Amino acid sequence: MAVSILLVRYSEIGLKSAPVRRRFENQLKDNMLSMLMEDGVEAFITKSGARYYVEASDIDAAVSSLRRVFGVGSISIAEECASSKMEDICAKAAEYSCSRITTGQSFAVKARREGSQGYTSMDVGREAGSAIFIANEDKGVKVDLTDPDVVFYVEVRENRAFVFGEYIRCHAGLPVGSQGKVVAEVGDERGLVAAWLMMKRGCRVIAHGDEELIANLRRYDPLLKTGDWNPQALGVVMGTRLDGLESVDVTDYDVPVYFPTIGMSDDEVSELADDRAGDPGPDEV
Image (cartoon, rainbow, N blue to C red; front, side, top):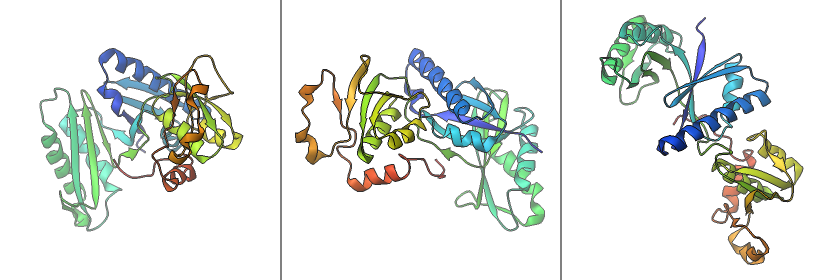
């Protein structure tokens, strides 16, 4: 049985300058390890370029954990090829496809490449597609590059190559702890969503209010603290509606006050809150 490995990608971290990007990458890795440890998932994480490679004792549990880590843009459950040589990629693509395509289905191969392998992404797509077609020819499969029933992805990075079937959408954003600390009033679902949105922007939240709501936030940061104030806090976060802004006197605070949900309707807030503050769906990105 083939052993799966997780390819973990970040999103906007890649837009940062090299020193900032390295700091954010290290924070993201620490957060991933903390989340896996909190969920009791044994895993080993390595990094190369803009990818993290996660080997885990329970792949599905690892995906469930890592999807809640802010900064992670997408995850793929992949199988690694023997090498980045074209023949090894084709062999793995053919093997991988046999149990994932059925009689009469159409398919396409989408490839991406980074490095100096001596072939192009188009070459990979063409050759891997040919190998898949030959391996499944008895099923009457066909190639459809416009609207295929099944898509096979190939990712080549230097001397490693991977085959997988989907991109699992995650929250993206910035790693928690990469920005400053803020105190969040979490007394209702607006407060919950406001705090969650600040966490997504990399803030370490110190929450006070409803314990059940705070427990939801802790799912996204096992290190989340509670309390009314912290001298290191750089701001206060409130889940305030636009029509309730007049009741807030920002002069009561010596730090900036943030209102992340002020432009959101009640339905938008409820949708995020009902989904435990926005667990991403299974959609492909």
